Image (tube, rainbow, N blue to C red; front, side, top):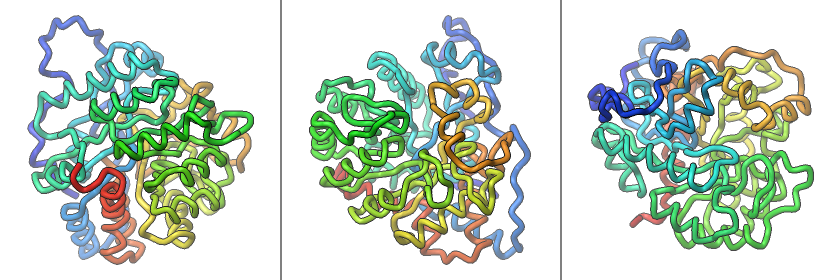
Length: 398
């Protein structure tokens, strides 16, 4: 399936504007195309044509991804990140069919300085090519789609880097950040994450932060927030709240998934849940060996629970070995506790069909066509729902 945007990609590779002896450490990076075999979805020729047309014509938005190339040797991950030059996978993105991707910069426990450096380096590199374009408004997303380009929306998974300085949210907004997670795994000044032993909910400072994000027009994410903190944020926010990358706990019973009451509360206030595909997360009883079919089980459940208008995809993928990445950061990410608390499953090497940001949406649109979804519903979950809700959060003029 040929990507709508592949013709606009001119072959640029990350940081190729630099002179060869710029002094940055060299890392062997995972390829962003053809690292693993393509996933086959059995379609008729007519279905193939329909899927290709939907991918080409629809606004396709990933609500959460990490469209960067990981190092081949994951023991070098820390040094790679500290080098400041973390490479976007431009060639892989050109195959993705995406109109926009929410790119979450920084990382768990990163300081303010490290986060701002990561953000600035990413945007500096993007400024030296013409395929990926920074997006700060819904108009930017529409324009990128019309031009066959890819809009890059920058966000952060957690607000740890702001400390207790509310004005740092304004600084992030000024630097182009348009989505901020309330908390990552542990607790911070705003609330409690999934690794907190007790979830006491949104703090007084957290309520002020939610109000500030509402006034700025910054999207609020509760993917890694605890259940009570998530509910508090949804209740406190005057604008819809996003669960950018998660799944349904009723389908796979781990703390990393969201319970029905959080999903329904989010939808009732106009929010969205983006279904993720990071390894060993959105499993299902029917498909305990994680692949695209497991993720589709979560999609069907959530559609029945809250309606198709509240669903999207936030695959949460990288270009590179995501399973090895999790192994390298297992303690930081708290993965062992999530897995130990849930049902047994068969470990995988990679999530078939949803292995990287270039593969996800071509696979998903094929599967939805195969499963008999109508065009209106497919275009809604591919990105139409995201654009509608962003206009409510960001405002149509911003």
